[in-house]
Image 1 (tube, rainbow, N blue to C red):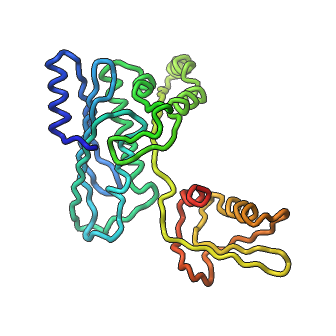
Image 2: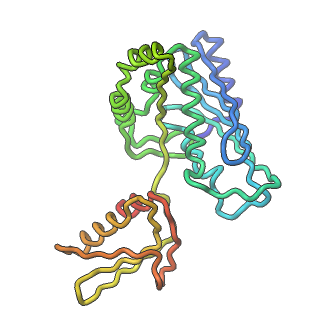
Length: 279
């Protein structure tokens, strides 16, 4: 359920009057392949709990609106991040420009949305004097709450977000960071530490077909419209075919796109296809 702008700000004002203490972190940035002014607010109480989030985005879509172009709305759910923000409001205004029409180019709106919420958390941590990792931890959705319906579109069926955070901090040796920074300062250099808890949906459904052919040598040939760009489709699809066909010593050739395919597959190059195929 989305709260309106006035609902969030009114609640913040009420909490202030009640003495509950509310911090209002604000960021105004420009991002994206085209000019997209963004204004966003994150409302937080005195204990560092997220109360509300809002974002107003102006998306330049070019001279024409192309059919099925979801880049500026399809992944707004990423704005929720991995956090227990109870109320959110997102306003996107598409504007025509004299430039080329906008099409997805890797990420399709996910990186921008992830940047907004994570930047907001960093600004809030700085204003409140709370360690950025600790502020994230206080508001991270616990695994016990799954499945969890966020306040911006998505429902997470599973996730161990706090564990992921701990693993990342351990891998980065956060505890030893101050010593490394001091050593860098002695060497006349600056050292910083940054991290983010971005999340995105995967395995979006799409129209696609495949064809399997058998020859007398025992070789199985799989024709698929999914185009690999280093995601390992050849290995994954070969394993899938051999498992489903109970082949003890599989010889599987992968070809794409298929020369003849009655299913008329739609070529795709997303790594999401691996998750979608395997479920």
